[in-house]
Length: 272
Image (cartoon, rainbow, N blue to C red; front, side):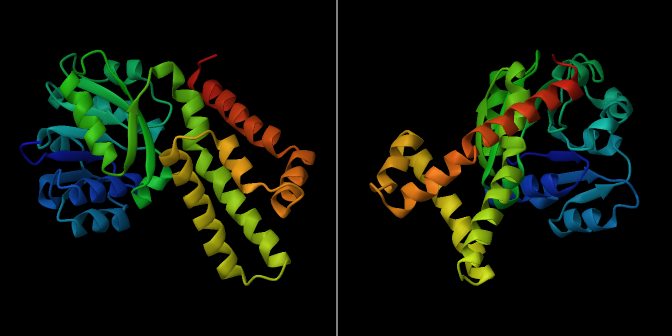
């Protein structure tokens, strides 16, 4: 990008802060090029944005007026009222929504017909600049808008384009998936503690094991099953552990969790 972006945030919670930090670190903007709006009582998040050098407001309209790219990062239930408030200033602006469950049609209906909209599903590891994000382009979004969206979210992890009908299963996988992985890390550590490891060491080793395993799958390009076989010696300890997992329906339980979460997403969004 040839110039620093003027970026606004409608809502400045933890995910918005993670994005802001990532964009600054990647050189896409500076703190004083950012503005954000908050509820007046949201002092901790207001102070967090001020620490980046950003301007803060307790009204939404100034954020849109002063920005080229506007992130919709308020709670999903408040999106219609917030966008209705800023609609008069939305002509020609790019809006990027991270509001879960709010469809492109709903977003576009609440803004000017000349606004461009991109819907993004990020996830919580964005806080560590290791997020897995996907985006869906709206009717008016240009190729340049999509390139910009990808560059912004690659500053906090990975990002790729998908059709909107995949958002619910993606939410169940990468949106909810960190919770499943946190339970796995906790369970690995619990087992290690039972076998004599100090808990702090068990958490460090378990989390690094999960991190490294995921990185190996991505970077090697090999099937996870092949990598699993590489670790599993005949009649060895790994084989014994895997047999226990299979006997206790580990694979079925994890796949079932993604299915259950997808169905819940569809129920909430009305997509059957």
